[in-house]
Amino acid sequence: MMAHSILIWSVATAEMMIVLAMACAAYRMLKGPRAQDRVLALDAFYVCGMILILTFGIETSDIFYFEAVLVIALVGFVATAALAKFLMRGEPIE
Amino acid sequence: MMEVSPTLPAWVAIVTSILVLLGAALTLIGTIGLVRLNNFYSRVHPPTLGTTLGIGCVLLASMLYFSVVKQRLVVHEVLIAIFVTITTPVTLMLLVSAALRRDWAIGDPSVPVPPGLPEEAERPEPLPESDQPTS
Image (cartoon, rainbow over all chains, first blue to last red; front, side, top):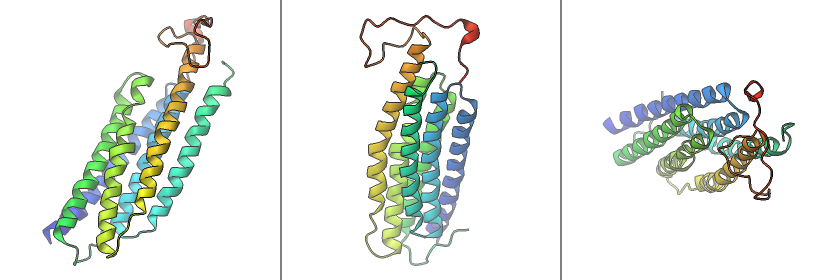
């Protein structure tokens, strides 16, 4: 049962690494310096969220977390595309 | 704490562990690059580690694990892989062209003329130091 405890510990370690990655993305999102950096960090942030939910699905052996990941992928894509379009057209400086 | 079914073969547990750890580590490296690099156009690159190999490894691990645990072929994770692979380049290209226009509009001399404008379009005057945008 050595392999099973390796699996348990590596899934827990992976979750901690993803949470650290989300913290890095959140730091960049708060610090900026410009709006495009924040949008880029938001993109990285939701991808980290997707990976976190996938590892959580492996941890609980529950197959239905997959659907949450699919929804986050869809909504995140639309959000980033809309924000990029806003930066391109909706800016008074243009 | 995670509960592993006692019938899970050892090699599946080992391969799943390696793939999950690899995916998480690549994503972490990508976001550390996002924090450490000092220019927006360099910062676009590192997060794509997470959106390609990072999520790819975790999806492979999830496919393998659930295929063995549920004792049937579970491949619907491929949907996520295809979707992320298609959408990431689209959003990042949109974002970079928006950033290019914004940098050009404030008179940054280091950026080329954005696509869609004539090559000899008049370059805007750089803003004075006190008027540089902060966001």
